[in-house]
Length: 389
Image (cartoon, rainbow, N blue to C red; front, top):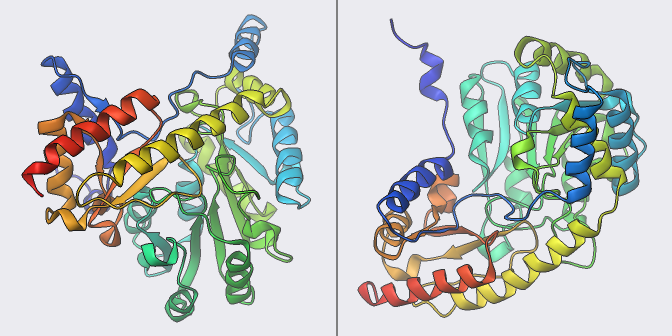
């Protein structure tokens, strides 16, 4: 028995492969500093945990609607309306287990073989994986450091064709931490407004930003809410990665298709976690604010320390919690360097090339770790740098 041919087109996240290797070194007695996993190192805020406990005690342990609990969909709609400056209703909201279904389900519902999808490179590897898995054509849009890892609008215009079905945006961005400026968001909307194209706007890091203004959402541009899928969730903002809860806000004509895919795959998201998510959105936000302040402190100190390592150069990311360090001047291919740092310095990082061709020559280092560990990781890397200086 052979696997179906399409399984040759599906990819994985290298972060989990590196985590396995790092755990093996830890089992052998080494002290590994984990900078590979994109996960807040903070506990889920106490009031959210307490809401989940109450929900369990109250019997929220059974099936719920495939689209999500009405109360949570109302809370999400109110939150998106408030933060994006658009009017959406609960009928446009789909609650799903984690953010990835809002990548996979809309693609599954919309893409035909040979359709084209424009996506950022370097970018979250699941974008390309799902495009290829469905037989569509991934069309990368390079994110260049000299442009602050923002999209090249001329290149975007040139790569739009009559086969383009979807454009993927991600801001703040994984892995670069780049934030697409608001004026560019408006220009992107102008480029695609009159085309039969839908935008998948991955805004999972929307609350983790360091500038004076929140990152712009293309859904906020007049006329774009009808052709935009907003992907957001609770994992990053509320340190709820293990709770597996995300949501999509989309045109009503797409909701029924996503609900059908939910019924055929997951039935529904867990009811008690949805009750906790209502508290996350409607309850106090002080824990989120404190987390972002701490991420900023770590970002500043860690990037400064990285820039003291021979062959490293790292600008300050505008959002998320990743340092995307240019390591070309080390003279070592980034994949080989990531392996070397894990083996010789016990520092787990990710090769930028695992996020796409244009990530080669970079390392992604998550600063979702204590400041003490981050500075120790930089010290270890600097100490090892004698082998490539």
